[in-house]
Image 1 (cartoon, rainbow, N blue to C red):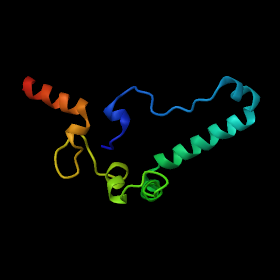
Image 2 (cartoon, helix red, strand yellow; image 1 turned 180 degrees about the vertical axis):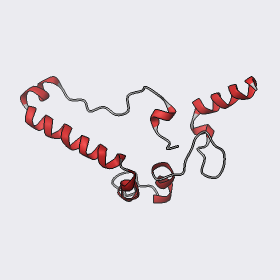
Image 3 (cartoon, rainbow, N blue to C red; image 1 turned 30 degrees about the horizontal axis):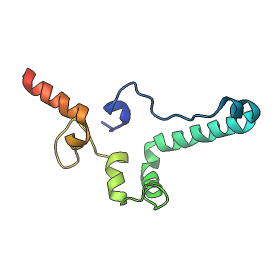
Image 4 (spheres, helix red, strand yellow; image 1 turned 60 degrees about the horizontal axis):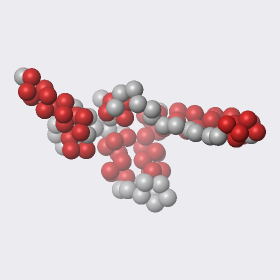
Length: 108
């Protein structure tokens, strides 16, 4: 299972590109190119074969500035918030999963 925000919080808005109405109207061609570039970037990020390269990019100081190893487990895997073990997500970072585990424990 790939850990995504959709797994952690189903039906929430993932990301939003917000522009003012006057920008969208007055600069419609630029607005459309911006949307196209964003969609292309999303497709790149979504392709599993690009995840190692994405980790390298995000690890750079001008972006996340984190050790690449920290990014790999979330983007390349394995990281499953519903499993326990060395690569499992820590429940204190995912309060919904902590509540779910506590509820299942009471129901058992």
